[in-house]
Amino acid sequence: MDYLKRLQDERPVLFWVVLLAGFYFAFQVLLLVASLLLGGFSLPAWAPLALVLGGLVLVARRQQGSR
Image 1 (cartoon, rainbow, N blue to C red):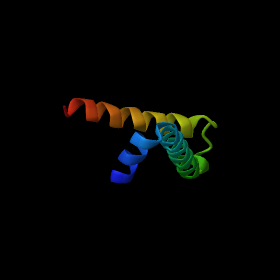
Image 2: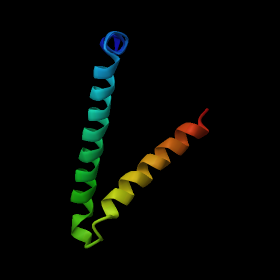
Image 3: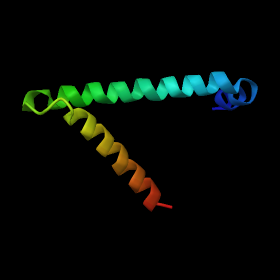
Image 4: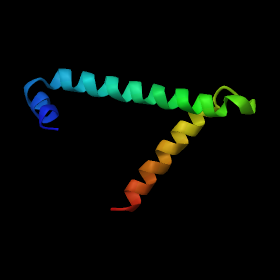
């Protein structure tokens, strides 16, 4: 964690590029896992995206309610 804080202070552009790349990679992995899980059910191609986005909304709402 200290490394990320130091990187944010010293090189903010690199920090944001790494952060955005990490979020993109994590989202792609979630989509891959969701498509593998839902692949056998003959659902439309947008179903994994809806599942991942719905899960992210559910997590965000739970975090908002816990404050």
